[in-house]
Image 1 (tube, rainbow over the protein chains, first blue to last red):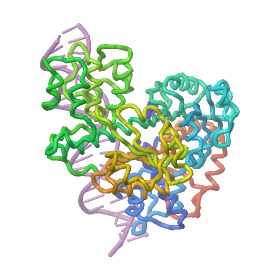
Image 2: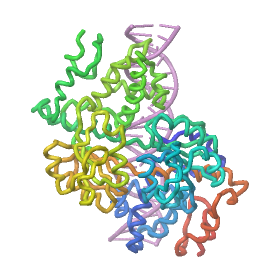
Image 3: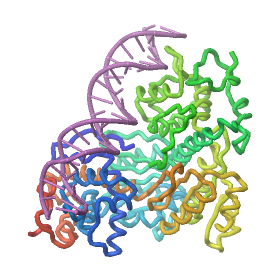
Image 4: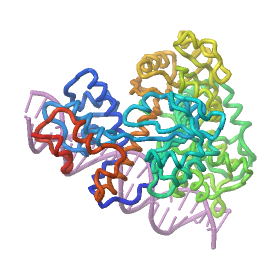
Amino acid sequence: MATGRTHRPATRSRGIPEATVARLPLYLRALTALSERSVPTVSSEELAAAAGVNSAKLRKDFSYLGSYGTRGVGYDVEYLVYQISRELGLTQDWPIVMVGIGNLGAALANYGGFASRGFRVAALLDADASMVGRPVAGIPVQHIDDLEKIIDDNGVSIGVIATPAGAAQQVCDRLVAAGVTSILNFAPTVLSVPDGVDVRKVDLSIELQILAFHEQRKAGEDAVIADAAVLPTAAAVERETAAPAARTGRKGPDGDVPAVMPA
Amino acid sequence: MATGRTHRPATRSRGIPEATVARLPLYLRALTALSERSVPTVSSEELAAAAGVNSAKLRKDFSYLGSYGTRGVGYDVEYLVYQISRELGLTQDWPIVMVGIGNLGAALANYGGFASRGFRVAALLDADASMVGRPVAGIPVQHIDDLEKIIDDNGVSIGVIATPAGAAQQVCDRLVAAGVTSILNFAPTVLSVPDGVDVRKVDLSIELQILAFHEQRKAGEDAVIADAAVLPTAAAVERETAAPAARTGRKGPDGDVPAVMPA
DNA sequence: TTCTGTGAAGCCCTTCACAGCT
DNA sequence: AGCTGTGAAGGGCTTCACAGAA
C-alpha cells in the first residue's frame, strides 16, 4: 500500500517491520484510553485485547522499539504512550493540506481525530471558486492556485487528496512538485509518484467489495442444500444473463457457469 | 483486518488468498475503465500497470480464479470483468444499512462509488431524532429504533458504522443480533464480534500516523548533518519536555533519548 | 515469437514456546 | 510466580524464471 520505499538510509535504520508500524497507532489509541483512566501499568495480554491483536504479536512488535516492559509486571502506560508517539513522529506537529473540499473532504476536515494527534490542517484547497472563503471546520477554503505557495510557506510535507478521481493525479503531481512527500489518497484511482514519495490509499468501495466476497462465500455454504433460493435477489437468473459474449474452451477452477459459456 | 474467519466450509472452498481478494476490486476498476474505452484485450503487463501492481502478481492472482487468459495474446476485458464481478459477488445486489449520518456518514452516503457496483443503500439510520426524515443523498434518514425491522425486511447482511466511537460497539451488537454478518467500521474503535462475522475497518487518523512515521524517517536521514534544525517545529525541545516521569535502567534500541531518561 | 500459467525459491510476518528477569 | 523478550518454527505472499499454449 505504501509506495516508493527505496533508498535504505545509511542512518540508524532500525528497520521496524511495516506490519508493526501499521499497528502502533492501534496500541497508541488503546494506551491513551488507559492513560485517561489513570491506569498505571498494563500487561501484554490486557493491552493486546484492547487493541484487538494477540499478545505474542504485541510483545514482538514492542521488541522492535526496545525493551520497554518490566518482566513480571507489564508496561508502564505513560511511558509507552510517549515512546510510541515519538516513534510515530507524533511528538512533533505535522502541517497538512487537504485538496478537494466536497462531501468527503468536508467530512474529513470536520473529523476530530484528524486534527488531533500532532496533525494540523494548514489549508483546505478546492478548485471551485464558489467554495473559496467559505469556512469548513472553522478553516476558510482557499483556491487551489495557491497550493504551491501554501505548501512552501507552511513547510507542508503531507497532503490529503479528496478530489474526484479525474483530478487526483494532476493534484498529486502538483503536490509532489511543491515538495509534498507523503500522500493520503481518498480518490478511487491509482496514483503514480516518483520514488521517495509515500502514498497510502483509502478506498471505501473496495472495502465493501471485499466484504461482499466473504458474504457471498458464507451464503454459498448454506446454499449447497437450499441452493440459489437462499439469495434475496435473482442471483441465479443474473448468472445466466449477465455474462458477456460467449467464449470457447474456458476452464474455470471448478464446473462454474456452464450455462453462460456455450461453445 | 477481517475477523472471525473460522469455520472452513466443507463446500467447494476454492481458497483464494485474502491478499488476492483485496486486489480484485483494483483489477476490476482498471478493467472497467478499459471496457468503457472499448479495449478488447489487455496483457498482464498493461493491466498490472493500470492497477499499480507487478505483472507476476497479477497473473498469480488470476490463476486462482481459473485460466482466463490466452497465451500470446492476453486477457479478454469483458470476460474478465464478468468473472471478477462474479467472484466478488457483485453480480448480485447487496442491500446495506448505514448507521450514523453525521459528517462522515453523509459523505459516505453521497459517495458515488458506494451506491454503484452492486450495493444499494437500504436505509440510513441515526440516533438523533432531529435527523429523522431529512433526506441525505436522496434517502430519508430513519431512526435507529427501526434497525432490526429494516434489516429483517430488506434481508440486509452488510452494515456500515459511521457513528462516534462511543456508540460503535453498541450499534455493532445490534446489527449482529439482527442478522448482519459483515461490518465496515469507520468509528475509531476496535469492535468485538462473534465468530462468523467479518469486520473491516477504515481509520483515517491511523493512515495519517503511518505516513507520519515514514515522513519522520525521511527527515531523519537528512538530519544527521543538520540535526534537529531541519524540523519545522521545535521537535528537539519537545523531546526534552514531553517525556513522562523518569524511569530507570531503560535500554532503547539505540542511544535514544538519553537526556529525558535521567536515572 | 509472445505472453500466460505456475512450480520453486525467498521473504516477511505470525505464532509458538520458553528462557530469563523482577 | 508472573510476565516480558525472543529464538525458532511455520505459514502465507511475492517474486523469479521458465515451460508451454497460441
